[in-house]
Length: 98
Image (cartoon, rainbow, N blue to C red):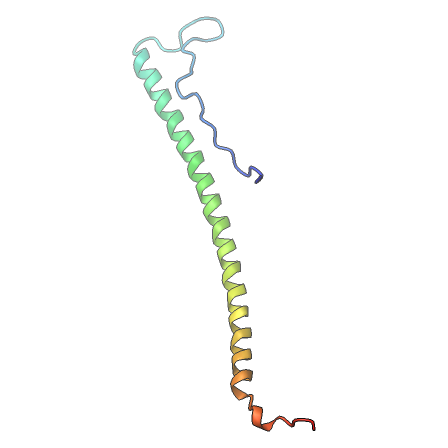
């Protein structure tokens, strides 16, 4: 079972209090507009967080792919060297014991 590296959880976007700890309203008018603005700003914060996680995932993936590219180049050079040795091999020149 894989380990969790990044957790994305939904947050409550519209859970805000329009009143102070004393019970006084923070907003005198346009309460619906205040809740809407708060909800939209929280949604943008969540999307920004998601973008940061996606950037982290893609940068990690890029590093892994570069490592695979380097290993493939090493394997390809080894295969090329072996291919050259096989093509140069002449079985008629090898002495056979009697």
